Length: 231
Image (cartoon, rainbow, N blue to C red; front, side):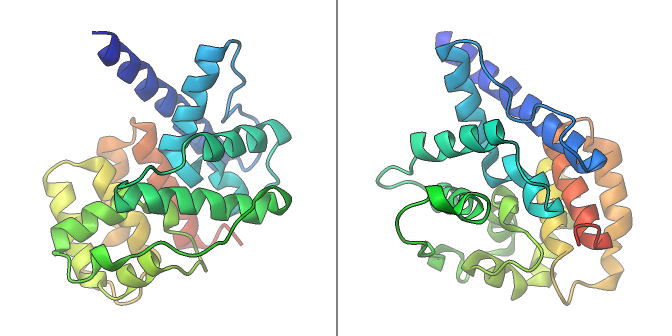
């Protein structure tokens, strides 16, 4: 029961954090507490865990809109990176998510990141079925950034039709989070079938799943990327 309660609290904290990011993406400023200050140690740990779950997207307004992060936001993000390194045998998505957070720190706070910036192995995506590929890309949607290059992005770029198929499948299954993450990737890819109707698809995903801040975040990021509003 205690574990279930902790999980529920973490889910709520992630939702709150995502809501703050969405608000900032919509307003274009820092009129939010995207990484809120915590009053006690337990709440602080929960906040750091929520930042780790959201990953690099916790600072997406700074990355996508070139808004300098607030010092307290950056400090909490840095603490989350330091507090939750991938363990031995961690899943590739966990390793890549951590790498993306470190890359974000290198961009926004270069004086506080030590060690090499070597990319993790992306071999697990080679030859992956389109359903699995779409799922993995949706989990790593924080890597879907304009002008950014990494092995995961290159794997996605090689298979736009498969990602489009995965987007359609996610919509049909009413998996709005996966659909939103796949849609964010599709806004970056060349060779996406015009018959997909991505813009209308994003509208539908937002309509059906947009009350979920994690869906709204991905859709908003996709729209900003698609319109070039990040420039």
